[in-house]
Structure formats: C-alpha cells, structure tokens
Length: 335
Image (cartoon, rainbow, N blue to C red; front, side):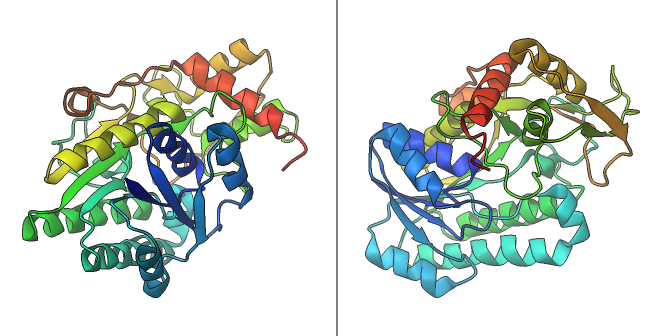
C-alpha cells in the first residue's frame, strides 16, 4: 500500500513514517517545512535504509494536494499537518482555525475526488477539556478549552458528518496525549526549531546548558506537587499506534475515536526528577504564572485502543527521558 502522510517531517509524522516503512508500506510525505527541514528525509532514510518520496506542499493549496494524488496511487492517508501550539492558538485563534480547518477540508475534498476513503486523523486529548475526571474515556462529552483544541474538535465533528453521509469512509480519530522521547537509534527526534511548544525540548535545552532555567507554568494546581499532570507517551509507541489504526481502517468502515496514551499520569516536576536521575543532568527550574488554556490533569483510558487496535504502550517514563537525551546529544552543534 502507498500511504500519504501529511506533515510527515514533523515529530510524530516522521516517526510514524519509519514504522510504516518497517511494516512494508510505501510512504509519500508532504510537508510545507514550516516546522521542519528537508534534513528529516535523510534521517528517515538513515533509520530505515529505504528511499522515501517527499513533496513540499502547502495544504491550503488544493491544487498542490491534487497533483500528489495524480502522481501517486494513494491507498490511505495519515493526516498530521496542522498548527499545534496551545499558547499560540490563544493569541492567534483565526490563524489556527484558518490553517487547521481549511487544510483538512482541502485534503478531504481531494480524497473524495480520488475515491480514497481511509483516513487516520491526528486529533488531541485537548478535546476532553478540563472538566472530566481522569482517566478519560472516548465516550465523554467533548469541550476543548483553547482554539487549538477546538479546531481539532470541529474537525472530528466534520469527519463524523462525512462518515454518516458516506458509509464507505473509514476514519480513526487519534486522541493522543503527550508524546516525548525519540527513536532509539538517536538519529530521529523532536527538532527544536524556534521556540519549542512542548515540554521536553525545553528540558533538553536547560540540561545541555543552552538555557539557564526551565519555566514551569503554575505550581499551585490541586495536585500532589502543584504542577500539572500529563500522560506522557513514548513517540515510538505513538507511531506504532498509528500503524495499528491504519490496519483498523483498512478492515472496517465508520468513524472511531481512540485514546493513545499509557494510562499513567506524571506531574511535570516528577518528569524532571526522573530525567535528572536517568541522565545525571541537573535541570534548574522556576515556577511562573499559570498559562491560559492549560489543562490540570490529563490521563488516558486506553482500554479501547488495547481491545480494538491490539495496541498497548510498551515504553516507560525512564525510556522516554533517556531516548530524548540521547537524541539531543547527537544533534548538539547542529541546531
């Protein structure tokens, strides 16, 4: 099968491409390189020892998407492309709605045109909002607390409407939690372009001495140590979950949501302590004001993915920290 991976040079996309290739799939990657570089293609090829097809495409350009479908015989799509910063979405909501919604609508239009009706969609645990008691199950009422999350929630609703209107479609909505870690080879990981949106790249910059101190948003939450609690998942577990979801949509029709996490919550401060223990590096930090739009506790109920996708996370928090540090040490001087 030839799988189109949008945003395939990003953190999650690139690791998923590696897993797809390992499972014998041909991959066509499209990415606009706004948050990645062409060097990721080389890194994917170094890890897999296979050539990959990459085309620079702006997802807001439907004609450019159509040309990809004309050039390749696409069987299914894994859709990662989109803006993902909670903080930025609060400051620039129109940017997020325009990019995330319109790019996906363009993709769906072209998929329909070429009768490609199998989609694995990159959603987010933010669609659960901050009102539910964890662990979070897929059948909970949905209410996202920020424009980024709301864009994902809107797209989930659009996809459900699409499947209801055309029962030949098969869509997996991947609500994943907090991916960290890197490929165990040290050749592929989260590249810290500009100001990172996620926690681990900031931790790595402080541990390596590039930044003086880590800023933690809020230390007065109603948790054991006052910091937010997250379900951190190793990027390779997450990638394998997407491959399992692809297998699912190949064999079923309809629209199903799946939590992809470990089912275990760790506070931000406990993540720091674990990182320091397994790497031997100190991470100085300071507590600053809470960040607008942040959720206090986010932990997945993963039973549905385990039962329906035959998938379960294998890596521990210690593995995530060690692999992240190995990756960052390998690119020192590169960024």
